[in-house]
Image (cartoon, rainbow, N blue to C red; front, side, top):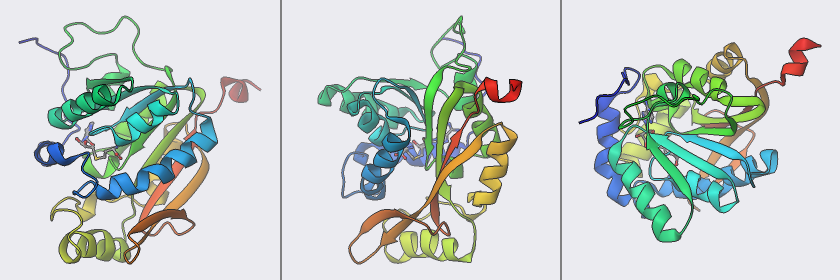
Length: 257
Ligand code: SAH
């Protein structure tokens, strides 16, 4: 067994176990992952419109079974997906191969990937991943980690000056508790009970403050709307429950001016 340097302290083993247990159904559009399948075309269009994905170097942090990673690769991006759960990564790899889509997957956290490490690698990369990516996506993941700030900081480190980082997560307020936990997990049972923990939800102001502290600037934002009657998602202006932020790392020139 290769000894590796990674100390993945910023990961919750219970969260990773939950995703491992569900992994076989990742690409079943009628499973627990239905919401991710349903929101995917909307977030993909939004990202592509802002960055023109074709030929871009993209990192998808917390990629899971690869729903977004694969879709970005189909748009011509050179995509690497990282995650700390084994089974979703395996599924992602199989699926990409079966679909003949070129995506590179590795088991790593954002923090260790930034330093040039992944599990199974005996040696660190000669060139770590700092300043390496045109685009980084970190979607529906921050609400599953103990310290989102550390993940955000690692993303900010890995993106090139002028590059983009996209985050999506769930707001923390009584409405998001009622909808994202009570309704989705207990009443409609779209997601299994325990999928989300209220205390890990993040207010947009908090996410923005963490991203700003890491040197990223806000470029665009949207709320994620869900209509239970039509079961459709859409991007809209209300950020009270799910939401997405597009951040950009300023070009060096800006500081030098
Ligand atoms: N981003 C994907 C999947 C979201 S599910 C999408 O939106 O389609 C959340 C994913 O985050 C799971 O695959 C889980 O294993 C992963 N994850 C949780 N904690 C992590 C950590 N600390 N580092 C990397 N991935 C993590």
